Length: 516
Picture 1: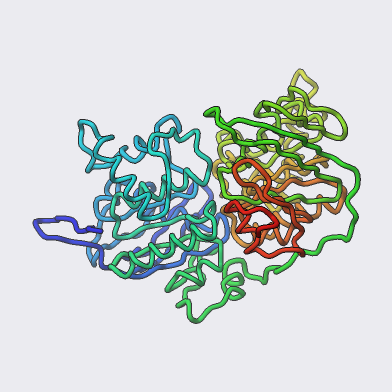
Picture 2: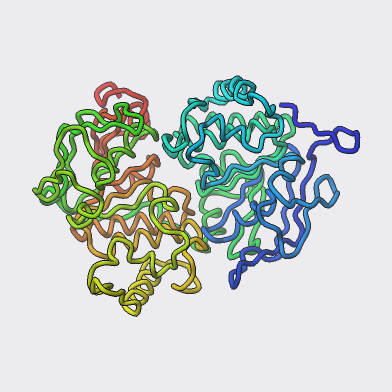
């Protein structure tokens, strides 16, 4: 990659970058407090911390999205002013965000062309198409450049973000949870790219909650807790246990105890289900499954193999073409989302910001979404805000949501705390069936541990859970049964004690259970 830039007639690239005394507050919340960070050419720095610790805020300052209240940024020893992402990109800083910065109605190609200085004014599509295809092949990130973003799965949208960042030839690449929706094989390929980049003098700041990844790829680690740097060390001096303890101040569970309970009556029964995607293509074909009381059924598979369409159909967001869905013995014919909720189905969506909350509403208002019409929150004439706020307070306390008040806009919470709020809202009513799609996506180890324990607790109390996840370790820890999905069909069903992660990986790639 040619990442050199002209500055004052001289070719220049980032050899070192330093953030000195960076502080940033949002109202009462001190997101960053006097943070110092350094990174050199050829280095991968792991940035760790709990959700809400201030990692993403710090990187948004480096990318020009936020302006620090105090402190300065130096590149190659010279102070720079980063007033916008364009300034950051111009000096060679690129960023892949955890929550995608894409325009849904535009195509992949159009999204990559937006803000791209090298795109010609006339016919930018023609110039960029070959570049996108080349990057797709080079980095193993296959994507259709003419596909609208809204038709892509979360995993496919992540690939677009990676291609967009790589196409701008950054010297320093900030990656915020880049592998959350990648398969293990894709993660290995990505890390090979990163190693190649750093061997050529590039540097990477990697925000990840996957401790194995940090140990595998990083040279150094820096830990932020409650807005302050609490530790930093070369990776050779650490192990996973020490990393976790540095992040959350305590040891984490390596396994989750589950009550030894025989599954009870059938809660969800699906038979011969056919569903099309938004493009009218087959997404789910002849799919049959059953979920019982006191049971967690896991759905494994690479993103884009029909999991999203399956979840949307069960929750009343999408109409099936054929097949039957029974909830506690009652047919869900022509069910919409409200009817599905009335039948006892609750849903933790894959994209929590887009579908799980209303960002500009207050926390207490979000705590009763889908229940706001029901007693005791409403009498169909007016809302009982005292009861709603009391309910929100109980969710905040019971599900460890870190917030200064129930009266703040929910968009000001970290991703992990938003997820805890959604989970609390969906579990608090004691649902018959919880459908959780990637519930720990992007969460730190402490929040991940908490969410998994809550799912198991619901199962132990008699609930049924359908858990969709690409985290195979999570499926093995939490589930009673695991079904592997590929191109809209189940390739096999296993129990965690009857197979290996490698066998499930083969089924995720298209092998049948017997072949694996």
